[in-house]
Length: 267
View 1 (cartoon, one colour):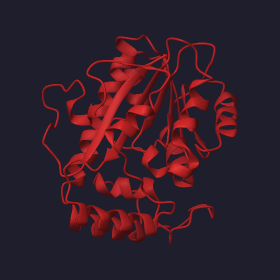
View 2 (tube, rainbow, N blue to C red; view 1 turned 135 degrees about the horizontal axis):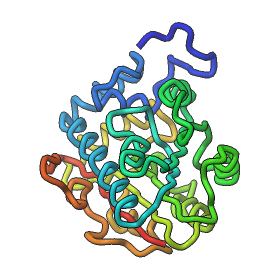
View 3 (spheres, rainbow, N blue to C red; view 1 turned 90 degrees about the vertical axis):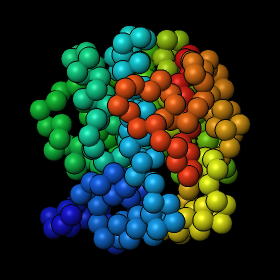
View 4 (cartoon, helix red, strand yellow; view 1 turned 90 degrees about the horizontal axis):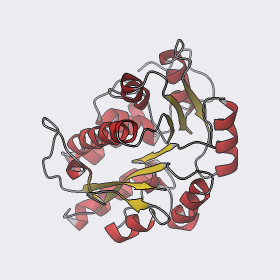
C-alpha cells in the first residue's frame, strides 16, 4: 500500500492492529511495518490466517442471527478495522436494506477507506473514536443520526477487547455501553484465548505484538471472557470457539493452535 497522499494523521512508521489484522487476512491495506509484525507472528503461529477467517465467519453468522432472529436493524461495530470481505453493512443490508451501521475505529486509515467505500451508502457511516472513551464515542455515534438508542442495537466487539488491558477494566467498559442500550439489544464479543497453544511460543508472539502496538494484546481465559457478558443472557451455544458458534456448511471449523472465543448476549 502506498503512503502517498495519505492524511498526515496516519503514521505509516508505526504498526496498528487494524492493519496487522488486514495483513493476516491477506489484504492490501497495510504498510511494511504492519507486515513485519504479521510475518514475525506468523513464524510462530502459521495458522493465524485460519483464525482470522474463522473470526470473520463468526461475525457474518452473528449479524445474520441478529437481523433474522432478533429483528435488529441497527448496529454499532466498535473496533471495526479496515473493510474486508463480508462487512457488517453488506451482511445486514442484504437482509434488510433499511439496516443502519456505524463503524468505529481509532485508526484514521479506517475512516479514509470507509468514506471511500460508503460514499453512496446513506445508511452507513464510519467514525474515528477510542472505545475507552465511552461518552465521546456514543456522542459521535448519535451525531451520525443513524442510531436510535431508544430502540434495540446490535453492539459488536469483534476481536478487539484483547487490546484493552486489565487496568483499563474491560468489564466496566462494557457495562458502560450496555447501560445505554434498551432491552432487545444484543452484545457480540470475540476474544483471543490461549487455548492449547504452546506457552513459550505464545509468550513470544504476545511480546512481538505488544512491543509493536502498545498497550499490546491481553489473552484471557474463558472464565474472564464470560464475565464480560455480565448483565446479558448468553444464547446457545454459549461462549465457545468462534468456529463452533452456529457454523454453517462450508465454514472453516478446523482446530487452531490458539483460540478465539465468541458468544452473543441478549439484554
